Image (cartoon, rainbow, N blue to C red; front, side):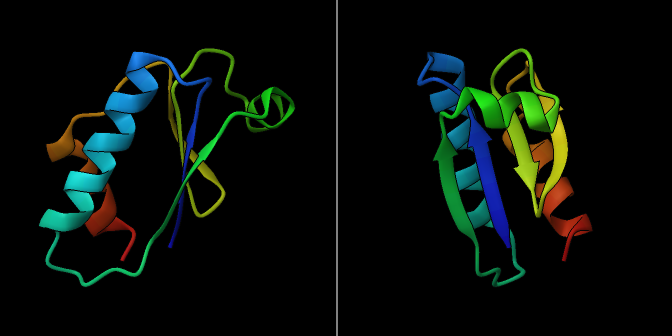
Length: 81
């Protein structure tokens, strides 16, 4: 599973990255995930992210402009299994 955090390195972007990392650890799905930070503003635009952070899972924009909570991320990951 490819998970991308779109952002320029702001505190919210770092917090979202940490939340995703913790959510991956807490799921019982044994997911193999590739987690990456993306700071390419052209890619943000292509994905429809105009306010960071953005969260993209398997090429699908999940959220933009907010820090998704760890619990919400667990639910999202469970729905993507």
